[in-house]
Length: 213
Ligand SMILES: [Mg+2]
Image 1 (spheres, rainbow, N blue to C red):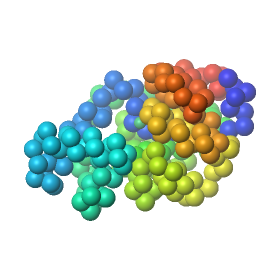
Image 2 (cartoon, protein in one colour):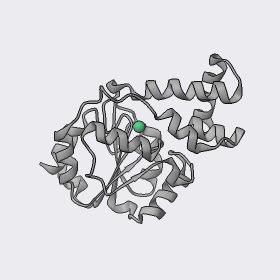
Image 3 (cartoon, protein in one colour):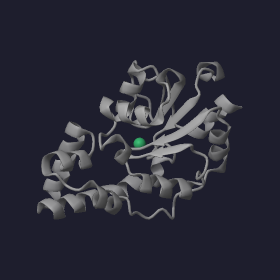
Image 4 (cartoon, rainbow, N blue to C red):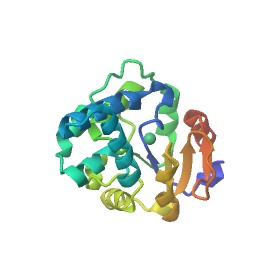
C-alpha cells in the first residue's frame, strides 16, 4: 500500500462524508436548509423544491449551481445559511488527525461546500490546523466537482501537480476527473465498480494507517 502512494506529495481530501463518517448525517441538516432556501427563494412547495434540487444535482452537480445558473441567486448568503448547522454530535478523531499530520507533503481540503463550513467541521472533528489549504466552492468560481472546470480552478490556485497528488472522496463521480489527470484516487465509502477508482475503503483512518504506518 505504502508503495502505491510513494510518489504522492499532495493529499487532497473532500470534506463531507469523507473526513467524518456518514453516520454524522450532517448532510441531512444541510439538505433541510437547502430545501427551505429553494422553497422561499422560488416560492415553491417542498415537493417541488426537492424535485428541483434533485434536477440541479443531476444537471449541474449541486443545488447552488442550479440556483445560480437558472435563477442567478447570490451564492454568499446561500452558503452561509445552508451550512449554519449543529455540529455537537460530530466526534473528534485524534487518530485520524495524527495520520493526516504524518502524511508527507501538502495536505488540502477541497469541498463543494464553503470554506466557512469546512472550518467549522474540521474544528468539531479535531482536525483544525493540520491542512495547508482549505478550498470551498467559492475558490473554484462556483464550479462544483465533478466538473473539470472545478479541478482546473483549484489546481491553478494551489499549483500542485496532479501526477504527484492523491484524492480522497466519498462520491465516486468526483474521482473521474482526478483519475483522468493522473491523480491517485481513493473512494471513501461502499464499493463502486469503475476504472477511475484505484482504492476503496469504508474506514479512512484505517486506510491512512497503512500509508503512514
Ligand atoms: Mg463528500
